Image 1 (cartoon, protein in one colour):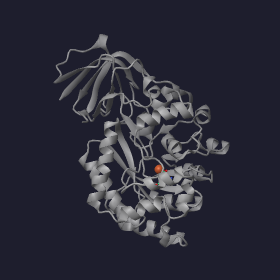
Image 2 (tube, protein in one colour):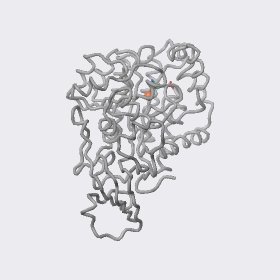
Image 3 (cartoon, helix red, strand yellow):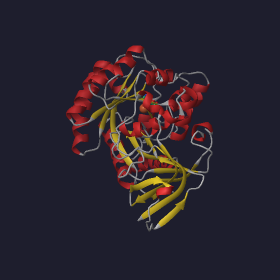
Image 4 (cartoon, helix red, strand yellow):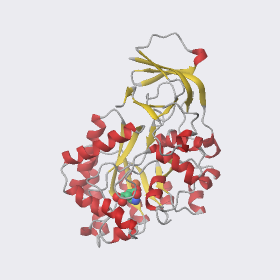
Length: 412
Ligand code: NIG
Ligand code: FE
């Protein structure tokens, strides 16, 4: 099946040869072709270029994109979309003055979601989660990472990871699975941290490896959750099972999570709302992608990751949603891109790079996703007619998407 898209007003994120990521000043460069065509053959990008060089082909279908922009679909490298129920009550409690941390201290937060998850059957969890997956696909996400971490028991964590595997099998979207058993300590292990870490290392990890349920390992490295030493121990164990680390750090406090992540060659360090100069220094000349989650800052009214300082230091940045029931009940990458521009002062070009090629890097898939390159997956967003791509962050509350393609197929 060949689809030809013609008269594209502007084709964004065009890379003749594959790149892994863009960093520092390069992030402001978004290569484009105006008045372009693009050919999709089956699930891949087969050709693209300027309309003056349109080859003579006989497509099965032609789409006229006059006035419309085409870009790679979003690569959302950090989500927790497999969860049970919701935490609307905590949202209202926060409106009434409680903080996210106070709610967690009184047994709410992650433990609240863990209680709900452990009471929910695997089929019911799948049904709730697929609704969110279908929603984000319609919003232009073409690849995403999903974490466990609301089980906190062997059965609960395996249940979540099996649901992620089923989603990956049943939908065309590329899904990467991350084991986040080290998300919180349940009340059973409140006073026995090493007991829970032993459970992660000796029971959860071998079972996960046996069923090949995860690609990555994550730890919530934060005051009141996992210490730097505990984070290191868990990451090292995960690495032994072939899981590369991608970790939660610096959401509320800078306690050394970035340094230990870099030392363990983490693929990404995520959140970064609280960053010291030393944290930024530690990320220089590393293979670790810093990932910012602006919708989380928005929803919790906490600081935003200091994007300008990080880019000025030559670092790359990826943007992701963090879609989860507690700190970010939204999987809208369009909102993430807009919020990065509005609140973090990222340029539209930087934000689009961060949400496409750098997001792909943060999932280890930048050789197949995240740019318009021949041979990459035909994962595309076709916008409605818009004056320029600035409209994407500028009209932050509007849905500017006309059509989403994932692996060459239209998402409905
Ligand atoms: O990335 N910070 C840790 N984990 C999630 C939130 C978890 C929750 O509140 O349910 C996050 O924000
Ligand atoms: Fe998260």
